[in-house]
Length: 251
Image (cartoon, rainbow, N blue to C red):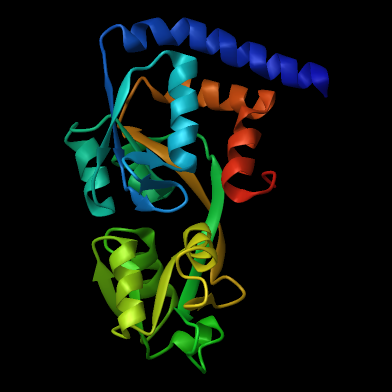
């Protein structure tokens, strides 16, 4: 097992050495588009942007010697920003999907996720996915959640918002009956700001989706980023960041 890990690290290091000089010689600063209302992956804390994705990319960039700056924006604008080359990289809990692969490139998967729903804590009769039929459900514009709701849940009145924070506020005011979004995001909210205000419908609505880092189509950043990500998983840096934000080791 140890030989296998050392071999993977050696391959990753060799790949990085052969690729990185030509990648970064022509690009002084990488612009990273980020949906900064996606707790605990990326969000603003005081005057700083923090989160799992931020820590992950910071470590990747440090390992590759990349200079970068963050460009906050709504989720719906991130993929268009890659297509128009206004950003080089996207961090946003971005599901790796075949239709997205047609217009952007992805890193290797770095997080397994799925969909869940939250309702107000005093709501009765909403306990399963089937109970959402005929109800008003909030979701974030431009996300795969909207597609999921349209194709997997029938007779749901979908209300779209520019970010998940707005959707959760609308839930609290009673304008929607539930909010559907990525499981880790809603779980974090239910255990922090939303504690005592909302509850998750159990079990999750859907599992088995993977997050990837997004890149411009044909980007030369993909291979070295994948190599550094592999090194981080092998040497424990990835586990350390994961444990910091989720309180457990990656499964």
